[in-house]
Image (cartoon, rainbow, N blue to C red):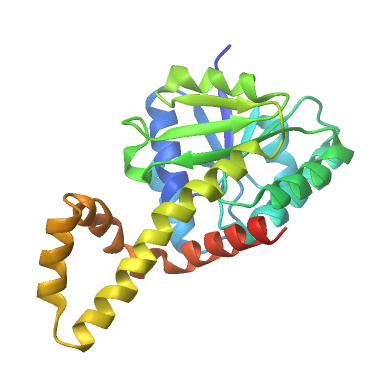
Length: 244
């Protein structure tokens, strides 16, 4: 059965597009944003998100909580949800962590949620925020992962990777290692080429040697200035994964 009430933590760029898509399908979207900045609160208002007065109220009203935050905030949000569920005495809450975190961080979140008996699903988002409902895919894993397939009724493609609680996070960091790695590599190489007055020449040679690759990467490079902090955190999670 499709979800009727979904809580999102928090309403950043990706959360905003999730909320808009869900609202367009008649889903009531809730958030707790009292500890968020004005920009986040305005995004929520613009998307028609209901702002509740406490985390306890959020977990009481929501059938599903979706965590979409920067990697460094993922465990903190899970802790707040776990505490709120314990206080509310809520049963059978489903929690999707859709953050770009390492498998080890996913395991930590599973442990944080376990005392409150929250049903944890590990997840990751592959695709741009603005492409929600237009091709962006959500990969999920864990014992309860198949329950997230109900989101497909709202034009959110769901792919179940397996039964382990950290497989989706592993998938994300390995995928991001290529996409974000290429962005960083091209930036470094172009800065080096410009230093020697060879930027145009090296671009032309790249285009000849690797047709289409630069076009694929350049679109995401444009947004680096805005998203650099988040992407640096993603690379920290990648490093943690392969240093484990």
